[in-house]
Image (tube, rainbow, N blue to C red; front, top):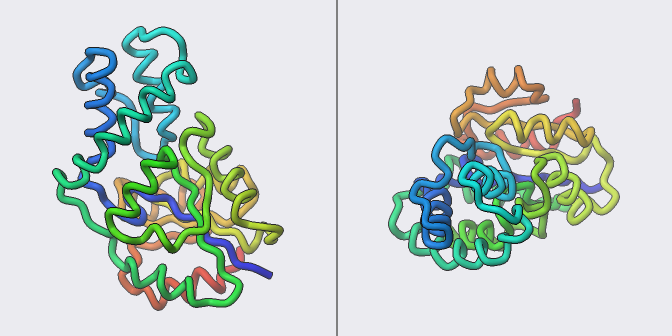
Length: 226
């Protein structure tokens, strides 16, 4: 049976230096005239759709998220590459070696379960030349709820894999609960703002400090059973 690993992006695979939030704020200001339009809004673990809707609501921009989605994402995507170059980001410890090792294993499928809008995900991963490792996934335009993103990722990538062979890997409690809501394995990594203990308390079946020891991590991800 296949083993399916669905990765979050920000603070799991890479750190963009805040390029995503910077480009989103610039797009919001250019379109609606509101500087720092996402101040006070939680980004960590949220879908970009949720973030956009929160910004629109906070500043009384009518019409709802769907009415503004195309215009906003077009502007955001045009600004994100420049923000990526402007900010000092990096791949997280263990990458890309972990992805390369996993991709060489027979029956392993790598996908994404990310709150990023799909094209933003492509831009971020392409910037660090790791986009080619992933077969597809679930993305942040699909829903306000992270669990829906994981469900979509499973439909796109899992292809009949058993729940005990699907792992969702991320750095926030939202990643963990979205995996649990779908009955699959939740893997935490403490490379964001949450500790390994906090991720375990959120329900993670297993949590790592980071993926520096990528060989050991690869072995654990391939063999772990809840």
